[in-house]
Length: 187
Image 1 (cartoon, rainbow, N blue to C red):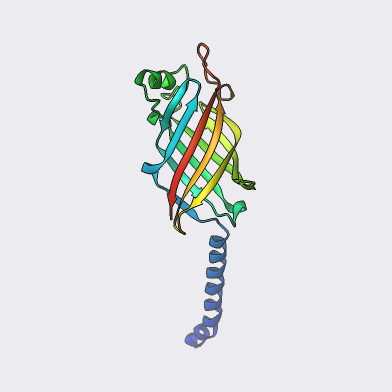
Image 2: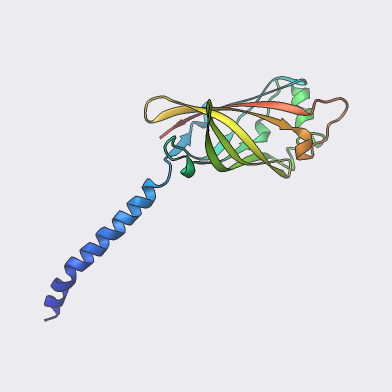
């Protein structure tokens, strides 16, 4: 008699499992796809009145993006500031010192996106940039160059004002620095 009860409830169990599988699949479909960062190929270049050709490497984190799911797209990335190279060891040392970036105390910069919006020439990532122990809201205009369905490159520009992040500016150092990001990704 116990076997008959199991057979009676088997269709109900299968239906519940099917329902759970559909709900789980629906949640996965509601999230923008995750892109993996091709870390060795990332280019973050810096330019300013005092910096002609600086670079930072070491970008890592999570990127979820789809032009069709902007409300489900997000970027949470971190840059290793110990990889800073301004093309001149003395200039790099000065920028890394406690007078500027203070890389010993603040070894990374972090961007946490709140939302991604469509813009006239691409997209805008709105979020918080944490640098030098300070966090400020920023907007990063960017474009996404798809290279087939499984690869692409995010390119964006950002102007960082040192005073916004409580960085010392010895002498007549310029306040702003232009940051250009080229972030190759794949799935």
